[in-house]
Length: 284
Image 1 (cartoon, one colour):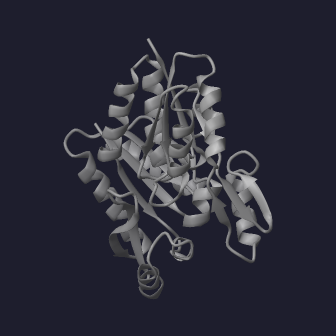
Image 2 (spheres, one colour; image 1 turned 45 degrees about the vertical axis):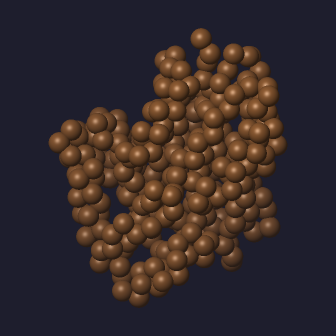
Image 3 (cartoon, helix red, strand yellow; image 1 turned 60 degrees about the vertical axis):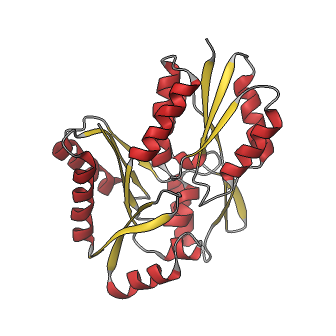
């Protein structure tokens, strides 16, 4: 039987121990800050990045991997033969990373099979999908079974995130100027998510942080329904203590034993800014 090898990019923000345990290949994006370029998660880690970001006098920028970088990753994954590659990436509405992966696929399609999927997500919402696909692959599931699992998770997942300021999303062109203005003028805390096209949009708008947090719990409860939650995670941008409080709340209120806590990496952090908290859930 053919093996499935799962590949993603660094915006999946998967904890290093899971990457190693599940043998996930990660192709890094780049972040550019204060005249320097760094490979996301390789040459710069979140803690250092957020420190540099606060000290910088201009916003960081990011760039996607080239198709050649994906070709190299695909060939490395396929070198033992008898391998199908499942490549899962950052929303195509937010980055050209998915297009780079598609171009790379066309360059190797006569050598081996590559399936490229647009997660329509960013950060650990991608990571949770990648981790579950890699677990399925390790259990010996076929490529078709892994793809079906990924597509089901993309459709069913709930993602709710709150940013300290909309400045980073607005300046990076990831959300409209009008939404940024409303947020700053009226102390409105938008609860953001991804729509079916993988774009960031305000799912709801609440005045004040505590009301926004209460609304997120409501949204999680609606997503959980009567069956409850199968998986949950909390992503944070330089807010470890706050993330732990969210994780404990998910454990106690929704009886989820294993809540993954992960850091929002430099590339995604460039666009959401420090202080962001995201809650990611998958219904049972």
